[in-house]
Length: 236
Image (cartoon, rainbow, N blue to C red; front, side, top):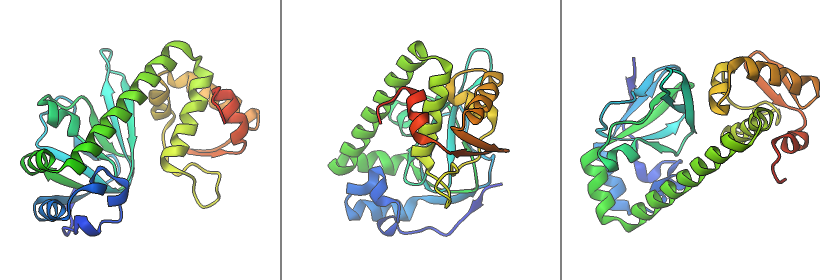
């Protein structure tokens, strides 16, 4: 069960500079502060379900969230990994459509909910926020196009290496500077790559044997990032 927390000031939020609200006018941030609801979601809790209609947008203050879509065969495909400063639910809200995916907390996370009416009204009158939302939409479209291309053209081994690097870019390392700062199951990693769980397990074992990574349960340590870049067929 989610826990409602004390409402914080959006203008003083440490995540503001890393979100679409970085250029929002102060008076509009004050409106968001008055009307938003902040909740703590425990690991595994659902923020919203695929197929339901949006009533606002969610802004992640702290923690980690995954957004996934169910295919025709009922298999989960993770489409986005989110962190503090990211917003979700805005595309469905702006298009008037249902949510295209389900958002689930990967760890205990604090998430602020901004009601639809206030978000849309401010978006219409605040060019700074409107521009940042357009830029975010453009960035997501570019990433989606690249993923489609890689799914069609790259072998699974390269896609898995690229996914590990993507996870590193999204969540970074733990204090040791090697261990990915998130715990994902083998199935979740497979759902990011777009392959079978069995293939992911086999390839992770091969990467470990080759000295590229080290495995300890759900902990993944990247021991040779340069080699992982080469396997992913990416430019360093």
